[in-house]
Image 1 (cartoon, rainbow, N blue to C red):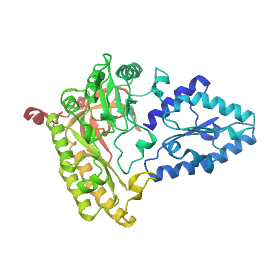
Image 2 (image 1 turned 45 degrees about the vertical axis):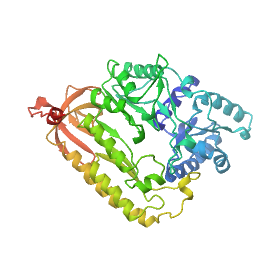
Image 3 (image 1 turned 180 degrees about the horizontal axis):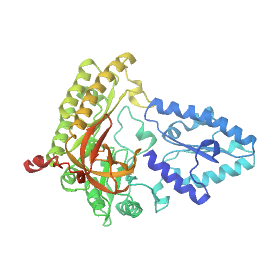
Image 4 (image 1 turned 60 degrees about the vertical axis):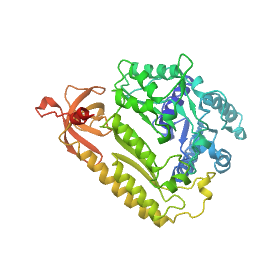
Length: 453
C-alpha cells in the first residue's frame, strides 16, 4: 500500500515541477512514507530523520531549501510526538490526506521564505471526502506489474493491530474508478495488477447500477480488460472469503492461483484473544473450499509468535495448522506491542527468549515447506511473465503464476512478454528455466488435478 501511495504522491507533485531525485543530498524535498505495524518500522523513521536533519542543515548553509515531510501511518499515530522529537520536519500528513500535499508544500515554502518554521503543517485527519476523488485520474506507470488500491482501512479491530487507528474505517472505491485506473495502467504497458487493501476481500464498491459488488465480481470485470493477463490481490481476511470470491478463483483465468490468507495463529484460544473472528477449523474449511474450486491454488500466510498468553500448547497448535495447510510462502514475526492496541496491556506477555525460540522453530518448518513447494516445480512447466532484464546476456527474470522469481535465457523475448518455461533448477528464492524451443519436454503441471476436479 505504501508503494502505491508513494507513487501517487510523486504524481501529485509533478505539476509543481517535482521529479524523483537520485539521493536525499540533492533533493529539494524528501518524503518518508512510513509504516506503524511493527515497532522496528517506527524506530527506523526517527533514525532516518536524524540523518535528514544533517542533510537539511548542510543544504541550508549553501542557500538551498529542503522540505522534509513524513507521511503514512507513523505520521498518523505519532504526529504530535514527531513534531516534538523532530521539530525540523516541515510537513506531517496521514495516509488519508496526501491528496492535500501540493497545498501543504506551497504553505511550507511560504513559511520557510518568511523564516517561520513554527508554521509546520500537521494534517492527520480522516477527511470526509475520499482522497481518490482528488488524485490525478490518469496514472503513469513504467513496468509490467503495478499496484492498484481498491480498498482501505479495516473494521475488524484485531487486538494486536494499529490499522483501524491509522488507516480508519473500511472504504471501498467505486467500480468505475478502479476500472478506469486499471485501463490506464494497461494502456501504458502493465500486464499484471495486484489489487490492494488493508482488508482487500472486504471490498464492497458500488457499480454503475448503484449496487454493491464484492472482490470476486470486481475481478471478473477487470479480467475483461484487453491486455491484462494477471490479477492478484492482498491482503485478505479469512472472514471475508465469500462464495463469489471462491467461484472466481475457479472460473477467472486471469486470477492467479496464489492467495495470501493470513491466519496469525493455529490456537483457538489465541485467535479469540486476537479478536480474529474465526477459529482454526473454520480457517481450514475455507482453505478446503478454495482448493475444491481450484486444486492448484497455493497459499501464503502471516504468523505472529509470542502473542500475550501464548503457551507451548498454543504454539504447537500453530505448527499443526502449518503442517495441515502446507504453505508456499509465509511471513512470520515475534509479537510486537503497539501502543494504543488492546493487546499491549494484556497480562502474561511472553518473554523475548521464548519468542525467539518459537520463531526459529516456526520459520524452520515454513522454510522446509517453501523449499518443498519450489522443488516440486523442477521438471514441470509454467507460464512466466517477464518483468526485467537479468544479470547475464540474453537473460530475463519473470514471475510464475505462484509469484516465484524465474530466471530464463530468452533471446528474442522482451520485458512484458509471456512464455511457457520448463523449470530445470531450484534455488532458495528463485527458479531457473529454459524455453521449450530448446527441445525440452513441457509437461502440464496440473493436468491430472484439473481432470479429477
